[in-house]
Length: 117
Image (tube, rainbow, N blue to C red):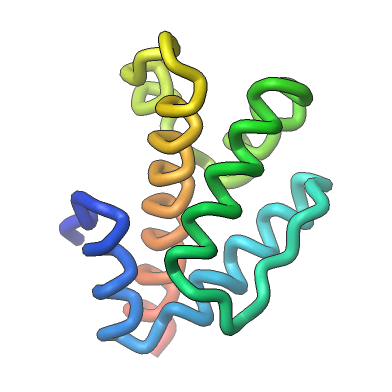
């Protein structure tokens, strides 16, 4: 599996494979499991998804760091990927972490789709 390099690539691939709603469902499932009050609507626009996810990750980093770490653990974002990011700018860090979250969730959805047939 070749992971998408950008948010736009990820969304296009999800829509092309008709898995966008499953991606949203997986996000909702993991956020609920992490006890974070965020529920994306199944019909959310990709731009709104990106913005809302970024905003939520930013607030978690700033105000609820333990919950942020728990979310990363539950979603199973690779620790080496997080450590490779620069923490100089929290807004940029939140954007990069949001993309890592989406990529990991996309992997789960893609593999589930490919191997459950």
